[in-house]
Length: 159
Image (cartoon, rainbow, N blue to C red; front, side, top):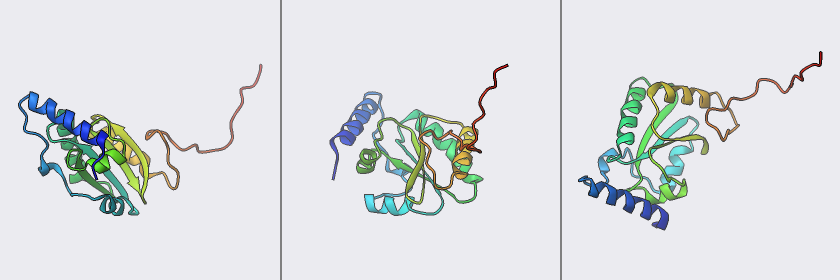
């Protein structure tokens, strides 16, 4: 089942690529061809799953792939990295509201822990993964948010 917004996004991306002499979306960047059901099984694991949505013809996506490859070579314990083409996975791009690429999402036990749109360096990605890896049972809307260490709030004293 194709969704009009995802199809329009892919079409516009393809038009822009063809206009610059590119060859369209490449299947070679996909680490797996996912149906909605198989994707749900992938992200419903008790470990961190980083999913990058992008395109092989997107410059920032390709730069991000280099950073992710460096992380894969020395991966944090319990982390899997998967790259999906928005053109070949339109249903998933629609479901997860992918409106800009590259977009990374972190999942654990089927829950999205956070996401980020745009390029990040290896160090920034590792820091982001580390901050999410410490979250147990709580999802923060901001992937860089930290969990409060105490419920006690200090009030300034008048002098």
